Amino acid sequence: MPQKPSSHLGRYGERTRLVHAGRDPFQQHGFVNTPIYRGSTVLYPTTDDFLHRRAPFTYGTHGTPTIRSLETAWSDLAGAATTVLTPSGLAAITIALMSAVKAGDHILVTDSVYRPTRTFCEGMLTRFGIETTYYDPAVGAGIAALMRPNTTVVFTEAPGSQTFEMQDIPAIAKIAHAAGACVMMDNTWATPLFFPPHERGVDICIEAGTKYLSGGSDLLLGLTSANEAWAKRLRTTFDAFAMCAGPEDVFLGLRGLRTMALRLREHEKQAFDMARWLAERPEVARVLHPGLESDPGHAIWKRDFTGASGLFTVILKEASPAALAAMLDGLELFGMGASWGGFESLVLPFDPATYRTATRWQAEGPALRFHIGLEDLDDLKRDLDAGFARLRAG
Ligand SMILES: *Cc1c(COP(=O)(O)O)cnc(C)c1O
Image 1 (tube, protein in one colour):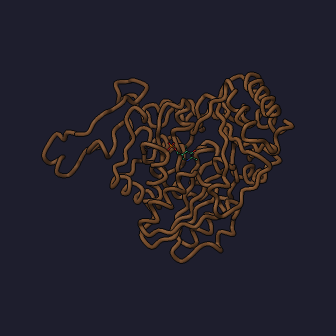
Image 2 (cartoon, protein in one colour; image 1 turned 135 degrees about the vertical axis):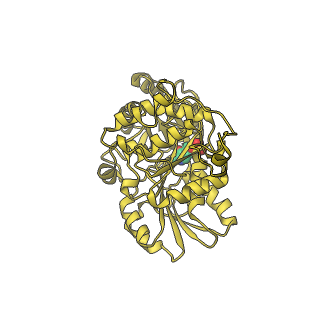
Image 3 (cartoon, protein in one colour; image 1 turned 45 degrees about the vertical axis):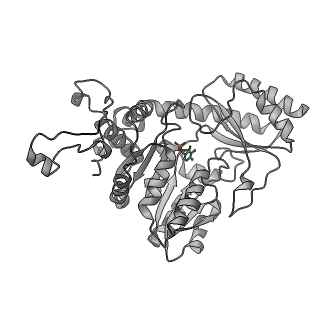
């Protein structure tokens, strides 16, 4: 049951839509926000209504007013025909893939993909007779050479959330569509605010709401949106799994949505400042941030994106594991941990060489992924300055 798109908001700007989308105060006694509906059973007033399932809501797994609020708002923001909410970003990815594959299919997945997506393809999809080929994220129109008669999905992620390669999504979509394949994108980094996925040719798009929709590192949520062509398949698959999100998390997602544009612009500003500062450091070999003029993906970013979020990577010059650990262990403000998108700054070391298959990861030294939060930049720089001193001493 795809929800009606809230097309009446289309004439407004993005920030206005973020404030108004998916709310109907006079359905809630005038209260500004849709409350948390919890529930399994939905009662029908008459036998006739029950037999014909004539009600806006039919059972807890098929949605509640709280869920419908965020689905509608997200469809409006993403320019989608429908959105389903899942209990995590990874669940949003698996629901997207399960909507489009069947036994005997072949799918193409970018080598820069979020690593658990790779695990799902290799573990689960292989078991069901679906073959995955990883491709160079910079492939562009060259994807044509990798398409087989049974290729049904081209999965993209731009930029890659560790290594930050950009992808030419419109060029890839054109070729995939000509072959009848479904184009998927993990758009968690940009959100629809900085990259309008469906307008650029993406059929099914994934957002880990755990990141910027939350903004607080306090919930797990996934959003999978689809264009008109894929809306029904996505909704049917979602209903079959009943992989529904929890009411509190959805409510917090709605709360985050209202301020997401402001937070993203601030993360963007802070991250640009830190990325430029880091690029000047003698300990740093390169900064991977598509918004920087020096980045190989900058031209595509400039053409297709309207902003950059707070996540980027720094390649250090050669350093010993002990020196790197001394640098990171002594940091006072940067936390070390997975996930990102919250108000706090994070850093983590990673090594793509251990899992890449289609491309060879070449780096001068260790890679550090940074998420820049909302702290004072001077404090963050002092923290890293002291860290770099420990790195040099090691
Ligand atoms: C975090 C993340 C996900 C998964 O989100 P979870 O809610 O943690 O499952 C998916 N894609 C990208 C790019 C992410 O960074």
